[in-house]
Length: 116
Image 1 (tube, helix red, strand yellow):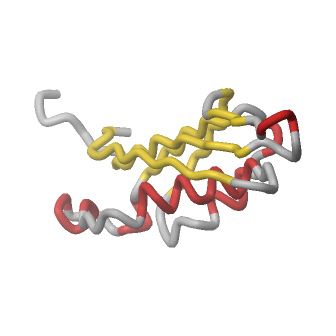
Image 2 (image 1 turned 180 degrees about the horizontal axis):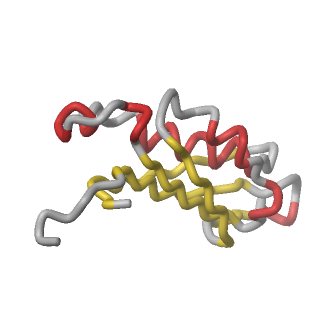
Image 3 (image 1 turned 45 degrees about the horizontal axis):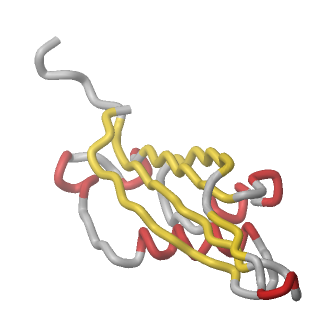
């Protein structure tokens, strides 16, 4: 894959400590700030897009990658969830922490190099 674009996002789950929801909001943050027509620019169909989604949260095992894939209307999505993000505890340990997720969304295509 030749990466042509990288977008970043941050999302949170304020009270439920829902790692998938925090990651979902981070993806939406990265996606909804842009309208880029890469497929058309390079003469590809939107279904040819290759999307690598890297997600960082404190509990990667609690993220459902299928929920995140469903956010993309087209393209081939590969989700990688790793330890990262941030859990912010409540004062005096009351309740669940606020969960913060970070994402890097890389978009590209399978392209041949012009220089061989």
